[in-house]
Image (cartoon, rainbow, N blue to C red; front, side, top):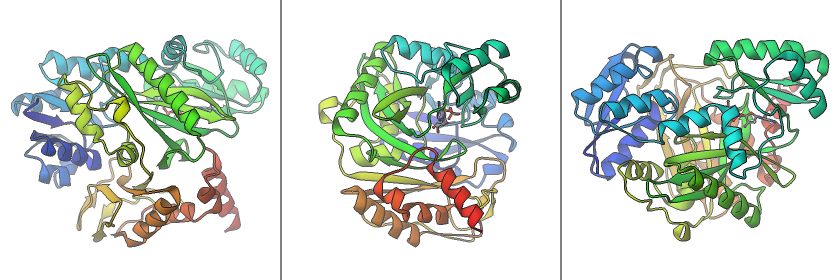
Length: 450
Ligand code: ADP
């Protein structure tokens, strides 16, 4: 087992990784930018190294500085968390060349899944159903428009190297295709450095259902059930739950087994998430994320497994402790993402947290890096914490979540907690009857009523 792990991330996930390491008797080094010198992860880690200025490119994306820090502190392995360099195959290769184990999948799998056109081809060959669409990249406007007309509108144009819900364009009429196509390409180039785009049928009322998978270096692979992440704003997840209120036991077993088999056939190592759209009883592959996800605690709460610890063990070459016959799903879990944002306008609200109190009690987990007096820097993502609640069933879980939100105190900055309260109090949410478009429709309705 590793003696020392370098954490190449910040915020709540840096702390989350530190916690797993400590429970495994592993020393931690956290790298940080000048803006994060007072972060909780820096305070708690055994060692910390300042690697550059606030801009991500100067610090959390600076491969040379991170590897120098790993070298200086004699770390054995690097955990990238999510975002930043977590899905950067070049970083994996350079880490390994310098003698550090990358806690994550092989570079080749990151490459394949990072190119969504290639990803769809790969999984199709493994027997996974995909969203109907252009067969590969859309090379030029005219052929794209022809395919779109054949498929029938609405369609969605997506960047092959896109991520984070950005760079997608929905087109509802043939006459709007040309403009959407050229904007999509130039935005893809500007944001992701590559203007390859592809096209899919835009599904009208799907849910976002993702399957958590795990593989090891001994050819084993399992799934840990699904998470329902249909509550989104601008294609970004807001609240996640497991199990999905929409799936039957048979559907869960079917898609889980199919996904686990594909992952095993690929020889995939580590944690991964296969994302599907689900509509009228059918699953359609969208993409695979080759890292730990923000919403992994939801799965931890219903299975009782520590997924970060499992990532570390698998990277060290140990076989999965997750065994198919031992994985049981108990009760229900919901996670709400707490963003430092105005809950009505979603404008970021960085600044000093003047009062902070985390909710507690049975079945309540608070993953954050907040503390009294913490100054949220303006340079990064606005997510400052996650409140995760477990109950014996969905109803108990929702009641407990309501209680926990009411108990939570974050003063000095605006947060999205009031938004979460309005979601969980809504009859549509309570009945489990919502699609990926529900939240935006709801927000529009609230706006027009004001
Ligand atoms: P990213 O990697 O940027 O997150 P995804 O491919 O995972 O992109 O898509 C993000 C979200 O966009 C999905 O969860 C879904 O809400 C929406 N979306 C993507 N593809 C489609 C589609 N074909 N039809 C309807 N909605 C879609």
